[in-house]
Length: 164
Image (cartoon, rainbow, N blue to C red; front, side):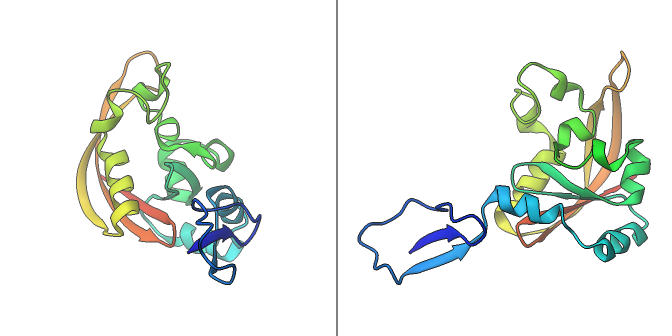
C-alpha cells in the first residue's frame, strides 16, 4: 500500500506502481511530526512540568522535541538549548563533541541512553530503570555521570525519564 504524509504530501514509502490509486494511506513524515510536536499545547507542557522526574521526549532520530521543567533544571539549560537537538548534544556527551558528532562515533553504539531510546522506538517496548553511565563534558575534563533511564513509546516518540 502506498503511503504519503497527510500534512505535506511527501511519499513515506517507495511507491508500488502496481497498487491501485485508491489503495493510498496517510501518515506523517518526521519533519512534519517534529513541527507538530513543537506546537504541543501549553496544557501538555504544563502537565509534563508537574511530573517530578526529569522527562524528555525524543523522536526516532534521537532528536529531543520536548523537556519538562525538571529536565531543564537537571541539564542546567533553557528550553531553546534542548528542543530540536540530538540527545548527546543536550546531555553534553563528551563523544558528541568529536568530529563525527552525536550518534556517529564508535562510542555511540555502546551508549545506553541512545540504545534504550532507539530500542523502545523500534520495538514499542518500554524499559524500566536501566543503569546508564554518561561521559559528560561540560568543562575541560570529562566526568562519568551515573543514573537510570526509563522509556515508554508514545505515538512516534519515546518518553525518556532520568532517575538517580
